[in-house]
Image (cartoon, rainbow, N blue to C red):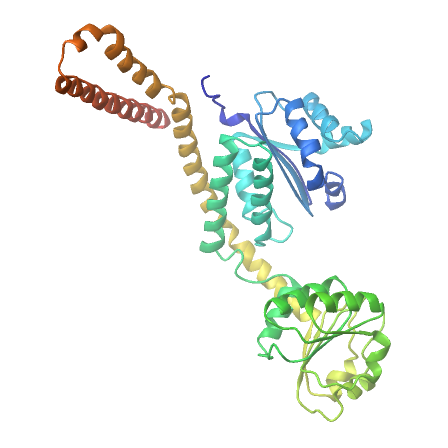
Length: 416
């Protein structure tokens, strides 16, 4: 059976992102990985898609697929009805109206830009590339992908790696947690040093995960809900305490990290004075709360090295501005890689179209030896037979190479 040749404009992307529909609507499109077998596999068959891949993150949901059919409202309505059978007709209509669809080389460009984080909520974050690779692998494992997506994703990864290594798009941290971690790391605190942590919410968790990865493990974790402090201490190492115990805490510490959702000051001047006791060493304090957890009087009355949210956000904004300045260089790299992709894609189509030619040529050679010139071959000695066979095999190899080379030359001439 001859290979199925797909035109580039058969490749489609339907995208819903934070910038086009908002994060809340994106979340409605989420499909759990445990549902992929029951939902994605039959869905591909129902819509007769040649290939299919689903990418879902916290701020985007995207569908990559190959189909010869036009992606119009009728197609989209069927697409969402089959993939989300629990949706109401109104939900389907909204999804159709909000769908952003691109195809062909523009769809490939979209994939390149997504993986390079140029379309991310935080430009320059590398996580999206690993998310796309994971999405592709899961689709591949379910036999949802084929020759085109294999090539497109491979070239997407190459393009993204070049963007991240040859531009400044990801060179400067822009998240408050990453900046706070960098600032604290610059203080050269020993990984064995005890650190007081006030609050066990998302921000402090992220901060402590970074510190744990760097070898820190001695945390005194205080939280209003003790069970949350206990759970975090079990994950990162250290000892949990109820927040009420902070006022009477007397153990030495090297740094203090705080981030709670409290509307008022959590660490008063008198409380801090009790914490340090007679220790007059300058303490790094990381206050990531809004409003601040730390009493302003602490900085006035004690020698502290304060790292606070306001200053970190100013650094983040400057770094983000510098990242955005790199987008021009990123787009240039993507243009280069798109041109390279198109060349490889066209060559691949020729290879697929001509994949049966070597077999057909071999069949001609076999028929010539076994049928057309069989009587003449019988009259030859073994050495002569071997010579004839070798000559035909040589010609077979050369004809295949010349045919492929000529086809590629024709393709290149058509581009000029």
